[in-house]
Image (tube, rainbow over the protein chains, first blue to last red):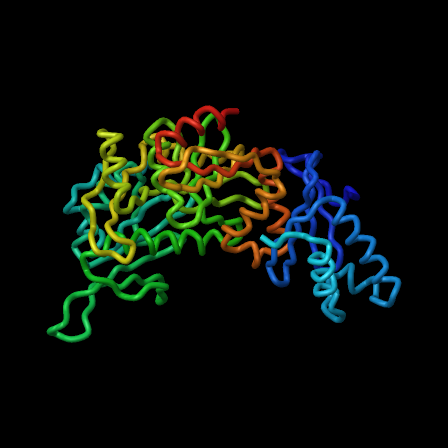
Length: 98
Length: 305
């Protein structure tokens, strides 16, 4: 998992990281196998493992190559159903919806 | 100028303030002005909030100005009580005898609403050794009973209902308030802790019989002292079971906590990340317990820094 957006502040420094693909925000705690996912638009919360998250990222990159504007994903824009695509991918990969 | 504690006012003084300009109370960092013509608030408020500092209500800023008003539809109808926060109320009018529980429920709602820039979790929260133990749970999980027992055993009460976490530094903001007990819990806590100061029960509310435990003076005195989250425990009461627990990853703890968070949907990515960072150094557990004694022992052994 790329360490984008390292935690700041007195607590959690260097212990955790977050990453966003499309509308899915992922949070990974150091030394853990699981990743917490959050979709701000729908307030859905999911849990997947690092392997699933990695697969999702790769699938998402493939999706970008197949025509989804990169800026739309980066900005979390809703001009393309990135969120639902990611949700379908997540479910397909077996992420558990809490 | 030093402020008075509510205990320094007589009950008549409290009633006069409630009927007049309002009774101003400091609840941690929040300021609240209360008015009421019900004649049913002075006694429980003076008993439960005796350690809280009193503000004059005639001027100055208050986070909320509340009014509990006696009302009835017709001359021949029974008296009811309405909760009003500057013209709005989330609650229907209740039987007049339920004025005090209505006040506490209404104040919970106000505190949650006024704390919207922070993360607000539906959860009891207590502190020991400088870290907070967060106890989220479904209704019936026993979190208020557990919270009362912990606070009567030396833990500091931060809140029995709302865990408020700053998005700036991820610390828990205390708002210690009376601890709500329901039905069998009232007798349970009364018997186990004979020195606990508990109000007379109010019967036939929509939650059953309700009584409130007076917050410990030390918790009220330390109500501006914020702490990081050290433990998140999801308790589940199951009669007839034996105590069992499971350590949880923080990722799992985070997703479960999100289910108990009122406003993270509104706070969006920033709120989610703040909540995550607030538990980055915490240990998370799910605990199923058959009785109060067993989980108290487990917490005492496990939730130590």
